[in-house]
Image: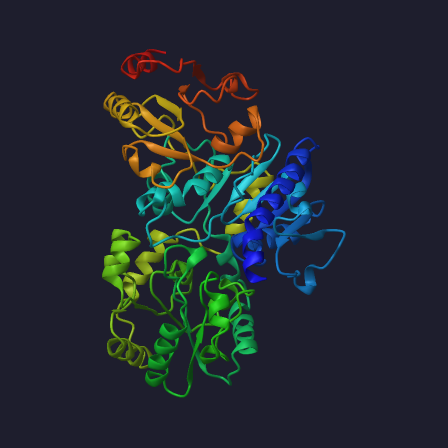
Length: 531
């Protein structure tokens, strides 16, 4: 029986995709409901992170009581009791028929990661992608196989009207450089701070956070060391099982802490299920359903590694410890920004070294306090407790003047932008790409998704890997792949996109070059440069 079930799974998955695609395509013909807001965090895993903070701000805003809120949740999760008002809030199960209908018709969309490959934002919709923190790890095209792993992220960013950013560093390093949105992203970057951090600075935040921690990790009046490492592995979908390493880490910390301190554990959401099954972590593992930001104000100190959580903790001006036993391997395989060389807290690599650092912490030593405060001014300058308010002012009230940036159009050098749509990468195309780049065109190459193809394209060009279409045609297909991106010239070398250049919404934005299947690629370069 298990073997039969295994053979049936691909067919069942394909059937589900066809059914949901049909539901979504039909829903795209319905009117957009301007007063409906759809929220999704970490693919429906909870009401957490920046989308939850934006929701909370809107829920309590007198000026926005008319809005209807829809949360995407999975595994039977329900909103907290204070939000269970069916007149104002409903829940849709992740990737259900109700989910796709709402995705197609909600006037405002809020996500901290990505919507799926079938998503095609409509002109009447407003999309806020909040992301989920300031990264220390390299992102986008800057990581191995970045063109493949980031394909859907880049697609979502291009569809977004607004991107949240915590600082000029995040805007430039992550969005503009590593995701290569400079000259391509058509919307606005809101350098408003991270809305999820607001609750850490609200009145009474420390008492509420301590009570929450003690609900899941019972303690008396002990001080709290929050241990919050990031995930390891090839991807968040295939993260390594953390149990043994976490148990060893906590045991070492316990031996260094006096009785008036307690270490509690908050793991990355991608490894929570595995950690929860490990009995050695029972009694100190904080649940995945509770946002880390709801807990941070209750911690007297933070122990982490490469997690972006420490950027959120900077606003509290409390000690941060870094334990990075795999620093060389991690830097090689995942990549870190250069700022990792000067972290705002003691850095240890071995357990004995970590224990000494913990003992110094308990004694009140804070050797990098001045550096930590400088980091806050540089990397978290807008985290003042009002980031969520600034975001909804931009999103609903048209006020994006206080902390907004436009990424430069036409590439960093003001070059003309060109899009090549191809089916496959071969030597002739590689030669054409190199020639066009030499002429200083800002070049995107759209190719059907195939593992490894992104690595065959000249690194200075942007590979935009095409995801499955969900049956989209014409205008919807264009928006699905390229969002609101505009190009000076676009050319189809695949032969499959006839008429797309005259699709509604694209004709005035692009010059579409028709190319015969037997075109001499050597002659195409001058034509693109002159058209």
